[in-house]
Structure formats: C-alpha cells, structure tokens
Image 1 (tube, rainbow, N blue to C red):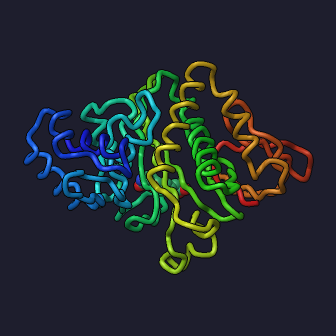
Image 2 (cartoon, rainbow, N blue to C red; image 1 turned 30 degrees about the horizontal axis):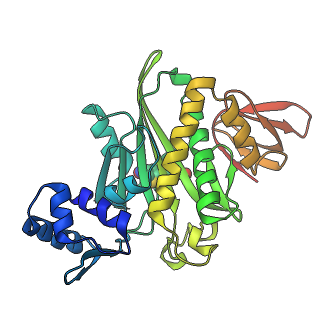
Image 3 (cartoon, rainbow, N blue to C red; image 1 turned 180 degrees about the vertical axis):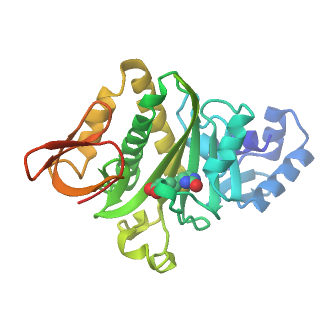
Amino acid sequence: MRNEILKILRDKAPEPVSGEELAKQLGITRTAIWKHIQTLKKEGYGIEAYTKKGYALTSVPDKLLPSEIMAHLHTRFVGRAICYEESVTSSNEVLKKLADKNAADGTVCVAEEQTGGKGRLARGWFSPKGKGLWFSLLLKPSFLPQEAPKMTLLSAVAVVRAIREVCQVEAQIKWPNDVLLNGKKLVGILTEMSAEFGHINYLVVGIGINVCVPHDMVPEELRPAAISIADAVEGKVDRVALLAKVLDYLESYYDIACREGFGPILDQWRDYSITLGKQVKVIAPDKTYVGTALDIDETGALQVKKEDGTVETVLAGDVSI
Ligand code: BTN
C-alpha cells in the first residue's frame, strides 16, 4: 500500500495530492492514509502536509529501498524481486541461501553495508555503509556451465555502460572484469555458480561499486589502488538511479547473450577494454611473464604474445598493465 501511495505522490510531485483523493484511489480511509504517511516519513521520505491541499513528496531517502529502485527500473525480470538489508555479511552469501530456497530468477539482494564482503581470489571487499552499491543478482541460465565465466565479462560491460551514462566518466575494463577509473579500481565482480555436469542450477553475480567511499576511510593497503565515482565527478551520485541502470543493462545484455550467444558482448567488452594492445604482466596460477595483450578469444580468455613471439592463452589469474 505504501508503494502505491508513493507512486501517486511521485507522479504528481511537486504538486500535492489530497488525503481524500488518495483514500478514494486506494480504497482505504483517510486515517489509514495518514498512518502510512507517518511511516514513510519515519523511513526518511520528505512529505509535506498542506492544509486543504494534501501531501506532497519533497525528497526521497538516500537509501537503496526496493520501492525507489523499482520506480527507476525498466526490466522484465531482473530486480523484480529485491531483498534489501541494512547490513549483511555478504550479499552473495544471502542470495545463495535464497537461491537454495528457490528464489525467483532475477532476484537481487542489495545491502547498505557488508561486514564480510567477498572478493576474488579469497580477498575481501571493503563495503562501508551507504557509500557504494553492494549487490548480487541471481540468474538461472540455460547455457552450459563452461559459458558461466563470460557472465562476469557481460556484467563488467553492463556496469561500465551504466556508469558512463549515469555519471559521465570514462570507466574501462581490465581483463577479466575489473572496472577501472583513472587506472584505479572502481568496481569488483564476483560470480559464483551452483552446477552439475552440463547444467547450471544458478549463478550469483556479485557487484561492488565504490560510489562515494571517502579516500581516508579506505584501508591503507588498498588506498593507492582504489577510487570512487565521487572522486572523479562533481555533485552527488544518485545510487538508486545508477543501480537501476546497471540492472537494466544486465538484463538487456543477458537477453542478447541468451538469444545470439556472447559474440556481441565480447565485442562491446573489447571497446571498453584498457588491457588490449598494452604491455602486461601476467600472474597465472602456475607462472608469471610479460607480453602484449592481443585479444580475447571466444571463451573470454586473454591472448598474450610473449617476448619470444609465442602466444599464451590466459584462462585465469591476474594481469597488471
Ligand atoms: C573483486 O575482488 O574484484 C570482486 C569483488 C566483488 C564484491 C561484491 S560486493 C557485492 C557482492 N558481495 C560480496 O561479498 N562480494 C560481491
């Protein structure tokens, strides 16, 4: 009911809507409307009450509330169910538990804070309260488990496009899926999979975007290599609008991949890549070497031409530019 009240207020804002009109449209009493308005105010919504004219929405809270995200979304199934938490250990962990209880395809778990955020290669992910987008998306694709790593590349493409559009900054992708801004890490993506031979039960794509993490709040050892969007743009970044745009692009690229395969996604990845054409140092699980990053192949693996002219295919590991 509160979401419906909000929708009516939002559509009319900044003009007020009378309590009588709200009560009539929603089929409840004016007293019930008044009670819902008090609850919304407690949640942080700015709602002015004008005598005889009614209620006007003046501001929305700086929180990733499902009602706010939904108001910005244009998706068919991604983000149509949202689990919102003030604080979690890790949104990936929460979503995996929901997935095991059969949560719907496209369910999103978003948190204001993570106390045990997980990164790649058993690292952590610093996720302070209200300073970023820390969220995970559940997908149940019909493609084969060996295709799953390409979902991380797809996610990086969706995130970069959304950040470029909403924040007007030139984010780029470092292979395989780090999103950088001014050469520093802005976004991390961690995809986890539950699968059997030949069948994916589900994927959990976890995305962390540093929106406005104050530089001196970042743990010292991470500080030189980390950046937030707010470090590069003037004014406040609308976290809700950015999250909704990322979800919009995740769904549209996922639809393309399901319909046409990952080819078009890999092309877009190449456009956003900071790695291709550069001298790189490859730290693979079994060896370290330098060379020139030539391209990614159809599996998403990086091809690196070594100084002796041979070409290595990098399936996993880290690459520094
Ligand atoms: C990386 O190491 O680059 C990947 C970091 C992934 C962080 C995100 S934040 C939301 C989701 N929940 C987690 O615990 N990790 C991912």
